Every structure is written in structure tokens, then in C-alpha cells.
Length: 124
Image 1 (cartoon, rainbow, N blue to C red):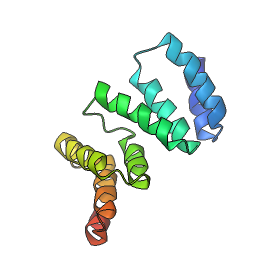
Image 2 (tube, helix red, strand yellow):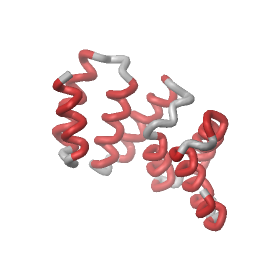
Image 3 (cartoon, rainbow, N blue to C red):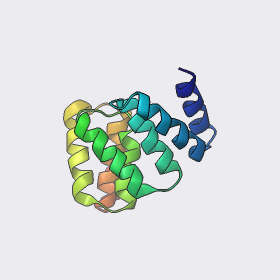
């Protein structure tokens, strides 16, 4: 339990290298944990390792396709990398899961912004 606290604290304090190391140790003890996988993705995102973060998020979405928690960060990665097809798929999945969640609004906003429909993006 202390490891989870230390990893969360390190992420909050932007000590992402330390958080990644702690999370790597925890993933050995809890190999199927989607929480740890999401936290590893966030650590890589904060380190600006977008390719690695995207890989973690892709595994996460394959394990839990209806997960919306932290998917706004994944949509930011797809937006920065200009991955239109992947962002479109994520937006459609998010709207089908729960169109009223804040994460869904962020995802759809990123999608419309990437399509240069900025007026519609602002609505979300």
C-alpha cells in the first residue's frame, strides 16, 4: 500500500522518473492492474514520452474499452501527434460510454479541434 502512495505522491510532485520506477516495481506485484498501467502512462506523458504513453494507453483501452478515467490525457497525446483516426475512434467510444463525463467533453473537443472545427470544439 505504501508503494501506491509513494507513486501517487511522486506523480503529484512531478517527480515522474521516480514515479515510473515505483510503478514498475508495483506492476511486478500486480501485473493485471489497470490503475498501475494508467499511472505509468501518466508518468510517461508528464515526461513527454508520448510514444511510450500512447503504448500504455492502447494496452489500457484494449483491456477496458469503456474506461474513461484518464482518457482525456490519451486524447491530448493523439491530438499532439495528429492521429485523427485513433482520436475519432476514442471520441466515438467515449460518447457511447457516457457523453456527460468531463473526460468525454475533453476528448470530443480535441477531436473537433484536430479537424479544425474550432467553433464546435469550444462548445465541448
